[in-house]
Image (cartoon, rainbow, N blue to C red; front, side, top):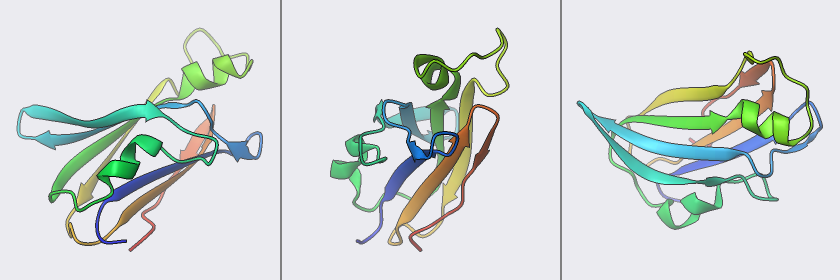
Length: 119
């Protein structure tokens, strides 16, 4: 795969992919935000809406937003009125557009882990 961005999310609390989790990907350019895509994590753990956008993305700053509290509440998890993680915003840079940037999120209602894969 040449270039592009992919997002994979696993709910480590259940040991399953975070199917149904709402995700947005935006590119930040000065004072402007460009929506790249928005959707929900599929049964394979991937944000399928990125499938058609897996080509090279321009160098720059990007943000992934994950609706963590909404996801866990929909799963039946009891969360406080003010959850520890509500909307998780993860900002990252694409410095080499011809390389692939895979973001594998490992998630619970109380924490997150992510690194750059796919280099």
